[in-house]
Length: 386
Length: 161
Image: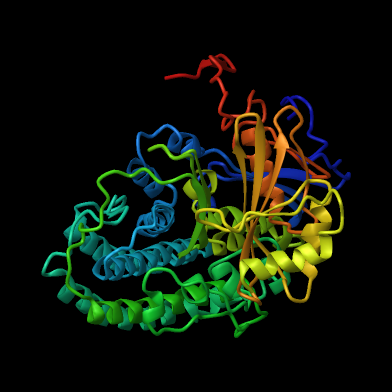
């Protein structure tokens, strides 16, 4: 860093600027960075030569906190706050990891309820992603449509566990509450209603000419680059890689449900452009509805708290469990030393890896397109910084 | 491929190399794991990525662990084509924590190694840009070390609250 009286001549990564280049900071206080992210742009006029992301503004020592809990269960509220747009999916991943470490078999009813909740939360999270993406591009109305629908999902969550954003709903071995009787009919109602809304939304935003012009052929992420950078979720599938952990490394009861993995095909431009990532999210929501309906139909009876262990003290060992969160591969690496406190917890956040590729795909882009590219990666900084 | 087959394949390639230190931890209580030494880490990683039968093209996660007296770096690898996964582990002494960087093998290691450096002070040799990533650039100490003491002040502000 240089003081304000001199002009900055090197980038943070140590490269010396050429005469025609200058540095512009996008963020940390910028409405289109979806949180507190600073992008250091090295630009020549309107053309971006290099992007250096600076993260950590939202670092809350999640991993350090975990090592100071009195038991494994206490970590769950912290896990909620990693990716606050999809708290259910985060809990899901953590409890899967902890249960594998403890070698607990979870009742079928719990498994199905978890899948329903995770898929509902996936829709809610994608709704924020596509809604705010519309705003980034300059379409305000779709955002309001998204929030009306998201509200319905939050009502379902509130009905079940009392919380609307951070649930602490999935516990190790079970759930905090069983479903209320009115949950199933209300959810079915929502599925029927929402299917029509997706169509409406597609007409409003996805196939809108201006939107297509702003996103097609922009920020193209080739297949091999996506894999090498560890991208996952809609970022990876948008580049045409047919990979979804729910199908390819099944956990919980996803192997008992039939659905399809959606991949980008380059319908409007090149495979792996911003539009492809957007359409993958749109189609994934339809698939989530299919999963929810099947899970509701197959939902067995049972006690959701039967398998909750009285005393959580895993044997020494290490586990890495990964699940498909709305943003991609969410993994928890947990090391146990045989005591009641986790020895080490590492959260492998999908947005962390997805964000690291941004420098690669925005080289040579216009500054205005930077917004489109950053929005299409759908990052949640709470998860990136942990 | 099962973990045993992956280990056999790796052992067939590197077992004869005296300081590769390939050690099977497949009987570990939960996740099977292969321990290797840092000397040939990069060539082992390249083999794992490029071998026709292994094809570990995706590095899921890279974590540092403080084992009190030594540090471990744990790599979770996955293959999207072959649909198998494996854990690779290296251990280095705490007084000289250097591990060769795998940034050139998997680009995703770039940020993950920066994080391990930031949190544990593990130095990844050959990393193109080893800066702190989550903590401020002028922060002192490496917070996830077990013997870490929180500094009293940071730029004149009281840290413990």
